[in-house]
Length: 86
Image (cartoon, rainbow, N blue to C red; front, side):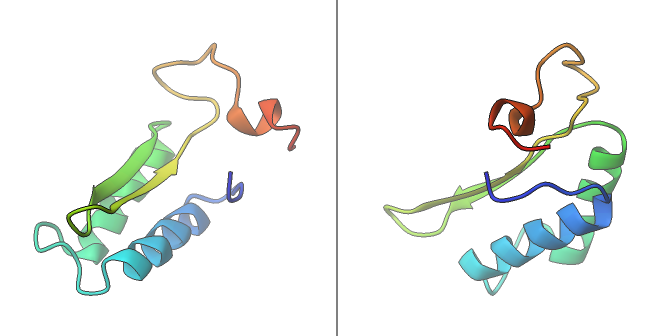
């Protein structure tokens, strides 16, 4: 677990930063600004966000933001709580 965020924008900023580290030129499918806008809408709606792709023949890059409480799994415990984080 890399962090927790109370604000959607902070989580999207973190996602975009990790994505740029692994794919500085972008992925060619969805521009990063649009990807961030969509992620913000998903997170605000209580939906997890996963950005992942192969960045070489042997290296997979994945960034995940888990929403608590989750819209589709409201009874599932928050990963931060299970890890002993507030």
